[in-house]
Length: 431
Image (cartoon, rainbow, N blue to C red; front, side, top):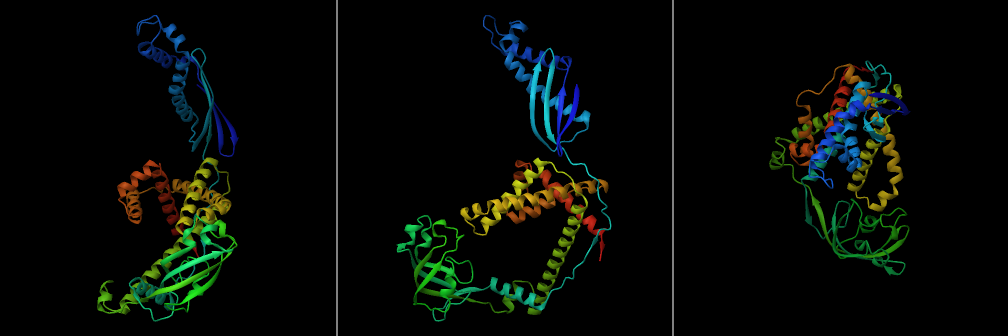
């Protein structure tokens, strides 16, 4: 077998493989024997046709079967011979087979980058002070109270932020009911007994300001100006007039901080609860600072090691990031139209981020090899348990899903990268 390697671009090579007829002869003869036993040749009983007749009858099928059998074998042998470890196969081309001359084929592949590893011990990073203020604690304490609060009917007060309000409403735009202009968004036309919360996501642009200060029983008219990037294209830039009737109000009632309330948090006093909140905030702040320091280390390494990247790997990473960004935007309530309008920006952002992520991963992988950093037994299982808890599923189920997507190796790589960053932080020069 003769193998020649040719550069075909950054991190891309073409491997030309050529065998002799002797190297493929036994496999070809086995195939002929198989076709002779199983094939049907006119004028001969099954299995009795001469080999040369079988070859003539099944010439095309034999050639394709030989290619299918031989290419993987000689491809693996060629990689081993040339000590190549491709990260992706771009394509197999120029395949030729003949029993008298052998097999030839070309494989275009992406390979890992070669680069000089920068100095990675005693990286200088700046430590930022971590503190928790009384205002932070009060805000978190108020959030705890809010989570345990409940809404009660209160038709006497005026509407204010945080109130639930029940409404009837109807909209007209350019002299037409809104539904005639935007038939795909009937909820923007009218509703009966519709509940909304003031101060959260508005169901109509600017409607909260119109409702604040009104009371149950009030009827009002409000001008609603739809922005140029509104999620419903038919209403973009238009102004509609809405008539609204306030039918009910519910106000949030905060819980009393008593023994029963404190018992839910397994504390005996408000001071103890506040101290727990302080400790949690402090730990979270310290985790954020550690993450920031690791990010600073990553930025330093990216600046010190510039090299070409395999485009297939970058493309795969970019596609994953795009899906992740779209999922996040969707969960925030964006419509399909809004997502499509941001498509170019999303792809551009994901492309830049994916290049940095792939580049840093290669650097960290090399450092891990240099420092013999490997996953300890059980590291993958622990991560799967953590992730599964967040998804509300079993670790076995999550592992099965990741295996279907061939994502286990990626997860192991991510864990090792994190472990390598821990090592770099431990050996950094922190100012």
